[in-house]
Length: 371
Image (cartoon, rainbow, N blue to C red; front, side, top):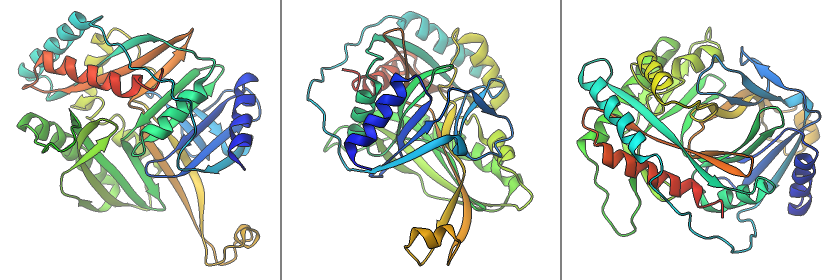
């Protein structure tokens, strides 16, 4: 499919108010889109189906499924998308600053009292936006964030979401599980040496240790990489890979419940941090810090490049694969307004003013694609 027909199909789908997702995975020149054939709202609880899943922060709410067998699938290979250079910088103000400083201060106090080790606290930033043209925003995301999962997701009964997330929740290929510990944030500056504070290393170690503890009961073996620095847009993060072999008796839902939400988006201990968030943030995160991605798709590996033979299973080794990304650096578009979601990890050493500045930097990162 060529570029024009690929995006024309998406524009027609959106104009017809039919569900779709268009996305590209990190360091990938492939853009995929799924066009659902009707406006039915499909959900999943078991995560045993095959499709594209869009799951909330709180799994007590509905996880939306675009079922594979109810969608048309298109693929486009392209490294850059043409756009008119009409961008302007996002204006940043201090609306909500005092509320966020108070929230962070309460989180720090709770941690120092011994009830929590870490809690991730977030806020909404509202900016004017043209929800009539979300595909233009998606194109900017694709051009700007090559090291992220970029997406535009729409369902008329749920809403319109876009994002550029650098964080893999986990990938399962056959029985091989790969996940990433990602924490700590600082602005990227060219030609400047990167240094991290003890607070940031501590925050990242909490995430790594938590993930290892959570996957251990479901794994035969676990391998942990060295801590490195990863770039996402104009931000830097600390990053560690955790790989394990899942036991044959383990199902995908068990892994999801063990890992979601991670300390990178919720805190630790998980249930106490989640309760603090739901009680104190004073807004509903909905799908922010949830996860999204391909669910139980069949992968073919073959020595024969003839597609017909692959479909007949000639020379093919068949595996199922799931790729889930944490829904960070995201926004929801509705009523000519962009609801931009930003947050940061709070530990005992956090400084409220610095945490505010971190959310401002994250707002710039995702918000600048709007204009």
